[in-house]
Image 1 (spheres, rainbow, N blue to C red):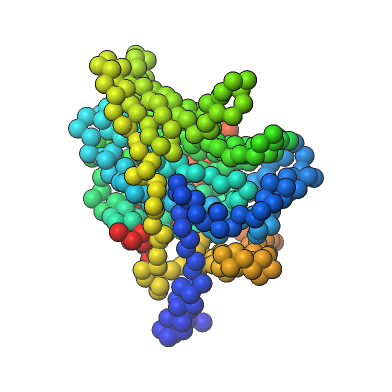
Image 2: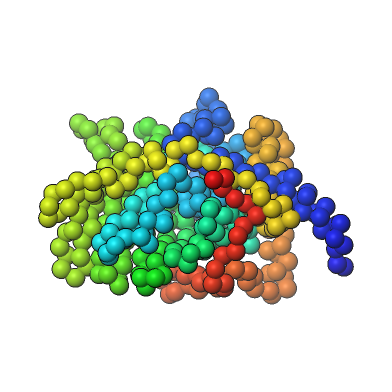
Length: 392
C-alpha cells in the first residue's frame, strides 16, 4: 500500500514531533548536572554487584535512569559537528605537510569530550542512523552491526576538500573496580586535493569505581599519514602526585615525528580540556596547538530544519520518547518506552534469523578481517545536506 501525500505529511510531522535533540557534551556539562541524583555513586556500584570481572559489557542493559538522553551514534557525531572553532577545515589549508599534519592532530584532540560518571548513551539498534549538517559539512552515521556493536561514519564538505570515514567498535569490560572501554577501529581524515589520508586511533574510556569514582580518557592515540611520512603519538593520561594519589586526569603528551628517520619534529604537551601546546624540536618555539575554550565550550544544540526529511531510523526520532521522558524525569514512562524500542529490535532480529535473512547496511559496505577488525566503505561519494542542522 502506497501512502498518500497527506498521510506521508502526517507521518513526517509525527516523526518531527517525537524528535528530541539535547545539548551536546561540552566543558559546562549542564545536561548531566540536571539529571544527576544525590546517591549516584551508590547506585552505580549496585549495578555491578552481580557482574563478574572480565565480563564484556557491550550488551549490558542499563536502566533508563542511567542513560544520557541520546544515542551513542549522536555522541560520535557530536564530536565532529558540535564545535565552537572549526579545526577540521584548517586541515586542508596547511601550506605544507607538517602544517597539515599538525592541524589534524589538533582536530583529533577536538573530538575529545568530557565524559560523565554514572551516565551512558543508549546502545544504538541495528540500522539506526544519524544525519546532521553543520555549515558546509554533512555527517551521516549508521549502526552497521549489533553483535558486535559497530558504528560507521561518513562526512563530506561542499568544497570537496575533506572527507571523514570511520568504523568504530567499542568493547567495554568490567575489571572488578573499574570498567574500560577499548574503542577499536580507525578514523580516516582524507584531504582530497593533497591526496593525503590520515589514520587515527581512539583513546580508551576508563571508568573507576573504587577507591574514588571517576571517568577519564586514557591510552595512546597514533596518527599516521603514509603519503607525507609523518606520524604522531598522543598519550592521554592522569598525572600523579605524591604516592600516586590524586592528579589531573586530563593530561596529554606526545610528539610528531618522521616515520622514516624517527626524528622528532615537535613535542605536544598540555590538557585536552584547557590548552595543548606544540614545541618545535629545532627552534624551541612554543605555540598553542589547541584551545578547548574556543573548541568545546558553549556548544549549540542541533535543531530540525526539514521535518519531512527525517528518517524513522534517525536516532533523535527512534529514541525520542525515551529521551523526552528522561528529560522530564518520568522514569516509569522512560523505562516502558526503552523496553518497547529494545523489544522491537529483538523481534526484528529474530524474524530475520527465522527467515535466514542477512541484514545489509543501507549506507555502507562492511567487512571483518581474520583478527576481528572491522572496515567500512561509504556507498555514496558524498553525504547530502541533512534535515537536522547545527545553528550558525
